[in-house]
Length: 126
Ligand code: 2F8
Ligand code: CA
Image (cartoon, rainbow, N blue to C red; front, top):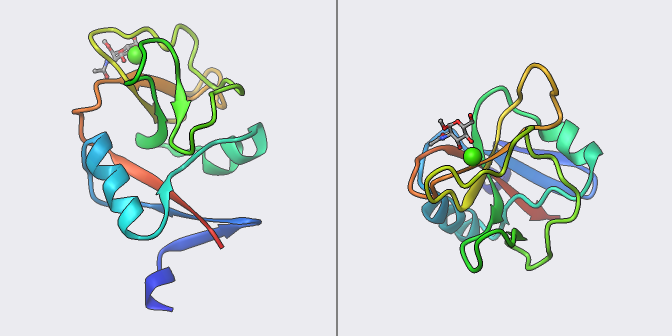
């Protein structure tokens, strides 16, 4: 039970919003250590459910090939919830964060440098 404290359930997955801040790769490592991974956002319902008021890492990056965004589970990014004008790679920005924005709330992703430290969202299969 202790290992599931702080996780929220939304069928069919569990999510954990970290309180600590780490860079993208260390954040992913922390999720993996919990038997989970950074969150993969598959549709607008999941996006809406997750939408945080501050910045969290999600499991999306274009580190392998610039401009080719991939989820940590290997699937290509098809559903698009980027903020208007993003991703813009404004200075080597290869990792995606999610943060609610007032004008178009669900358009919440932005690419930023992977070395930034942010809170992060882990996702686990139950
Ligand atoms: O205007 C959007 C733009 O804002 C910042 O750059 C000025 C962000 N950079 C960082 O957070 C480091 C960009 O990612 C974002 O596109
Ligand atoms: Ca950006």
